Length: 246
Picture 1: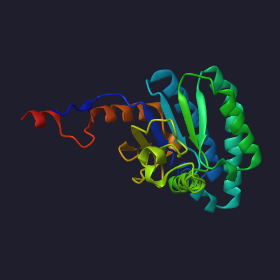
Picture 2: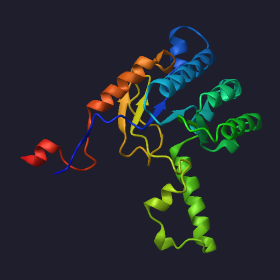
Picture 3: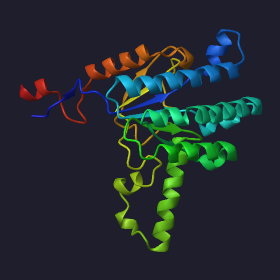
Picture 4: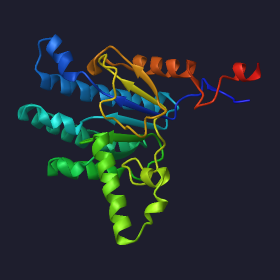
């Protein structure tokens, strides 16, 4: 008999924070204001998850490498918002025992942003509470490419036998090494696609799509997503318990 995992709370929740610009446009406000508001909501959700849920890992996707195609003024505004968010929240997150790491190719970001990100990471490295994983300059295709290059270099140098390359080896070279895959992924703004977010890690994740734009996202939205997750049967290729017993 295959036992279902029903109503078990997710340990790792990831959020694709989408719709900042559209939210601002609908209110006839500058897109940059939408991004500023989105950062405020991110802080509120982080605190809610840390204080009120049993989630142990929260990943938020702040910036995709695809976003580099946006107008330079908007990209510059986003970089500034990220930098200020990190500077203003490093001590607070540290005091709340939140452990922060970053995934993505940070070398593509402005040097000042890289530096404050490293400060936040190092300041919170020994914390034992919520693990906050921030995806900046991140795209799954790019992550896989970088992982494959690392593996290829080890094979070429003789450090790794190519016949030993398997799924475990691949995962060990991803940005998320050592972090469990997301149990639940939430995407806001009504879009129902992944857009290159964690293509390997999300293969067995439950998905919840929220119609509201990210700046309108609330702790109640988050809790409702947890409730929806709890209603689902996670069979992982097996069959429902009632079916197996028949």
